Image 1 (cartoon, rainbow, N blue to C red):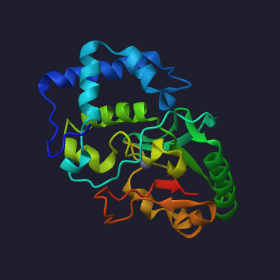
Image 2 (image 1 turned 90 degrees about the vertical axis):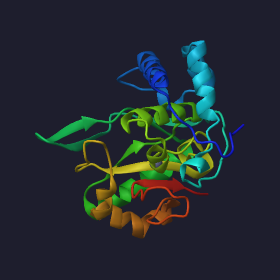
Image 3 (image 1 turned 45 degrees about the vertical axis):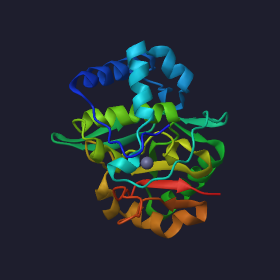
Image 4 (image 1 turned 60 degrees about the vertical axis):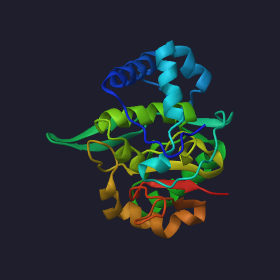
Amino acid sequence: MTERGKRFNIARIDRLTVSSILERVQIADDPVDSAAARMGFDQLYSLLNAKELQFVGRILAIDPKNHGVATSHLGIMPPPADLVPIRGQRYLVNAQEGQRETPIETQYLPERTHRAYLAMNEHIKRDLDRGLVVESGYRSPAFQLVTLLNYFQRFDFDIDRTFKLVAAVGHSEHGFPERQAIDLAPKTGVSEGGVDESFALTDEYLWLLQNASRYGFVLSYPKGNPDGITFEPWHWSHRK
Ligand SMILES: [Zn+2]
């Protein structure tokens, strides 16, 4: 149940709870071959103590409308059975000391979307002589919650700022296979925080604008989108 009209606040004491939840998830995960993105709520809950569980309940009750975004609730479904792992991806990260090749944690996509992505990537490689990588694929609703907590921390607990970039639990196309989202990134260089708005200046992005729809992919959050979400040139969702 959402708390209509009520804004969510994180007290100083809650910040420690956020850290401890993130730490528990990290410890339980395999750092090389991460499976966190496909975790169910039962798995997440089995890692947490009573206080952390209570805090998670408060996160699930947040209504993002009270934080300036108008995304719709897509639903909370268990992870699909046909997730295909994408292992061993790498891309270049532009760090202060220069570019460094960086591995991307194992990502997952439902079979149908994975097939469409592979076909599209073959096509862009033929046209531009370079392909794309999946920076973020399927994220279960439980992992979406973990992702939100990560960004709360990264954005110094600025809740409104977080919701402009990370969808509330049950609102994310990353956890909704019927409209499966992929965050795409160029192999040739992203900022230290990952793919960002500068992706809109790349040839890969222009190619996607012209060709992605042939493979069923749609840009979900163009500039000035009615949902109030940041312009996300990297976020493409696979529609039927
Ligand atoms: Zn995304």
